[in-house]
Length: 72
Length: 493
Ligand code: SF4
Image 1 (cartoon, helix red, strand yellow):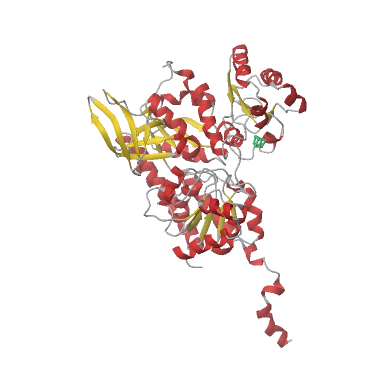
Image 2 (cartoon, each protein chain N blue to C red; image 1 turned 30 degrees about the vertical axis):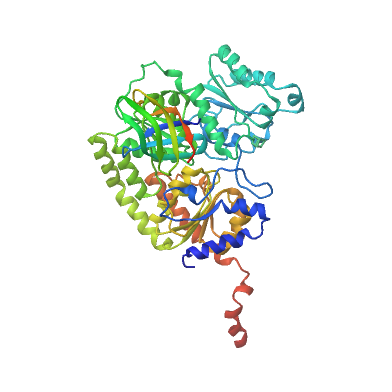
């Protein structure tokens, strides 16, 4: 379960950063992205998939969250 | 020599790899690549931040070097104890030329070496008592210090000393910030982990000291310069530009910096990151905890400076945006004159670089402003995110080499025949003896500053002075070079 730091890039895209892996990728899609449900499966710019435990309110970005890596 | 094609570069890499045994070859192959601008991500072409191969000559440093030498060392009003044997601190003392103002030995301590000077006895019986004594002595002899950091060398971690406990006790006793840093040299694969550990130590022991204290008057234009170590005065040459455009620089991390500046940084509006590799960690932390956005900027060469000034200004209101334009305008005549003078002498010259974690990509713009071309570059301790940022800066089919070995670097230079090599002190004399002009690009070869418009003038002069130095023509003995020309002379005689 890597810790993922989320931040907004200047162009508004969400960046997904794992310090331990030097992984800095854009988030291409997020399963739930609405005011009352946030999280689920994320697909990154390089095609890899991770999973955030869905939450009832969107997190205040920037923020560090735990994510699970999903194998393809 | 004309630019190499992709195939030629590929062949060169294969040829250089040829001497290694199978396993080493497979490993090194992953660290050598041909740049391809169409790639978005570097991990498709190059591997970085991995353990160096035993048996090859690597150019990297250790975690202690990353923490004491780079991040903590320049904080001038603190005393940094090189905790362990005397050598690590003494041989690296003041080598990085982090300039500062102050009276050394009274209120600033940058160029001094403090060490607990471990001997056999301390290794056997533990050195915590000695460290405690060391701190008391420092307090007695240098009462104007504003804090102490304990920079662990290898043995501290090996014998399991508890420097945190000593720090806590002494912190109460002297009522001063005392920071234990677990940056033992053996941690990680290069100095890069030392930067990270140092950042974390600042986060845990210093950064929140003034949380909740609102006595510091802020302005909407407060910024912090992060990751500028004031080598040869770099941070000063950068700071003037920022101040001229109307910003207030609250803190310099860490060249010519003080602990008070660091404690005030959480109050700024924007963090400006120059050396991304060594200080992005703390910037990310401040973004999350204090909601301070950060941007990377580049103050090498007029093109990149103008670009950066505008990008910084975009985060502020119109007065700052006008300020940025005013600054660019004001220096225009000056840098145009520098380019007019040196470009004709340097145009078309080819450069190969091999530096630490930032400059392999940051200085490319400055060379291009002078009409030069960077044909190969590589990082000692860069990570994937550094190579991501490099791909677009470099031309197609140019060489990328990560953690290059002494042998590979020499072979590449022999074959590519650049007009200039920019790297560190360990490489300097090898290449000079090979007859290749060389600049030491870590501490600017005893020159500098190279940042900002003022720095660019010095940069251009230095490159010209090195490349066009008449000594390179005197490399062969006259009776060997002029053999053909002197023939007719003999015949006449
Ligand atoms: S590797 Fe260890 S012994 Fe060597 S300089 Fe670094 S801290 Fe000192």
